[in-house]
Length: 159
Length: 233
Image (cartoon, rainbow over all chains, first blue to last red; front, side, top):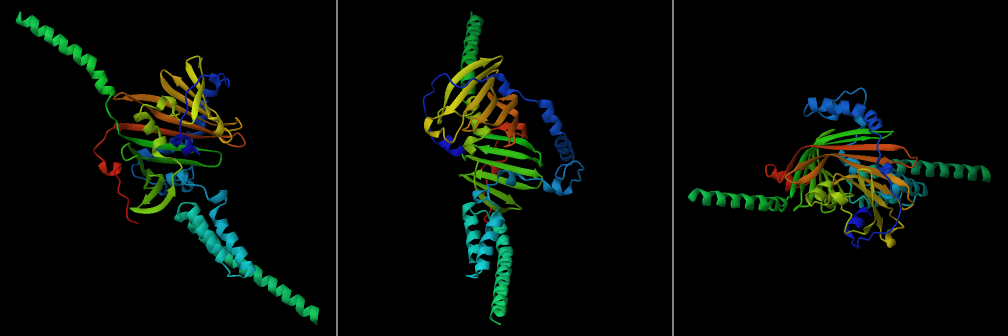
C-alpha cells in the first residue's frame, strides 16, 4: 500500500479545516530513548573499536548478539498470511499424511505456495520444506494409529 | 584611467559571479549519495545493531547496503526487488517493501524532503498551522483511500523537515519519525540522524535510530557499488 501511495498520484493542495494538531505530537522523551539504547550504544562503540568484527566474534554481556537480526531479516517480507512458513509445510504434509492420499503432496504444494507467495524466497521455502518433512512423519504416525485403533476395534468387535 | 577601467571590469565580473554562482550551485544535479550508516533497533523483545555503508544512485534507482555487522552482507534494492548477497552469492531475493524512490536519499537529492515527498501524491495538505517554532502540516489521503490510510502530520523547524507522525485509518497513532542533526552538503540539507518510534498494538514503543556519517555526494570512487553487478547465483 505504501508503494501505491507513492506511485499513484495526484491531487491539488487545498487548505481546509481538519484535525487540530499541536506541538505535543512532536514531543520526544529523548532521555528515555537514550536509556533504552544504552547497551546498543556500548556495542556500537565496541564494534567501531574493533573494525571488521562480526556478531559471532563479539562477546557482549548486555546483548545476545547471536539473536541479532541482519538487515535482511529487518527488510524481509512477511510469510504468506502472516503464518510462519514452517507451519504451511507442516500443516499441508500433516493433512496429506493423515489422509494417506499421496502422503506429503499437500505439503509439497504448501512449499511451492510459500516459495511463490514470498517472491521466490529460498529461506522461507526451506522452512516450509522442513515443516513438510516433520508434517509427513506426524501425518503418517496419526494415520497408522488411526488404522491400528480401527483394526483393533474391528477385531474385537467381530470376535 | 586604465586602472579605473580595470577596477570597474573587476567589479562587474565580481557582481556577475555573485549573482550567477548561487544559481549554478542550486542547479547542480546530485545523483549519488553514500555514507557510513548505523541502524539500531530496540523493542521489548529484541535488539539489533547494523553497521555498514549505504550507496544510493538516482540514475540506477538503486540502494545498496554493504554491511559489516552483524555479518558481512550486501543488500541491494532495485527494480522492486531486494537481493541479499553473502560471500558473493545471492542467498535470497524478495519483493521489496521499500523502493529507492521512497528513501530519504532520493527525497533529499530531489529537494523534496521538506514535505516528506507527500506533495503530488494521493495525500493532500488540508491544514497548515504554526505551533511555537514548528510549522505543522496535516495531510490526508484522498477520499477513496481513507478506508485503508490515515492522516499524516509533518512538521518543519528552521525550514527543514523536523518530524512526521503517522496515524492509521482509525486515527490510531502508528509511529513518529524525527529528522535530526542536519548537515548542509553542497546545498543539500540532510539529517545525520533519523529516529523512528513505532507504537505497537499494546501501545508499547520500539525505537529505530539510523545515523549517517561521512556523507559524500556524487561519489565516483566506488563505482562498483553504484552499478552493482549481481552474482550469477
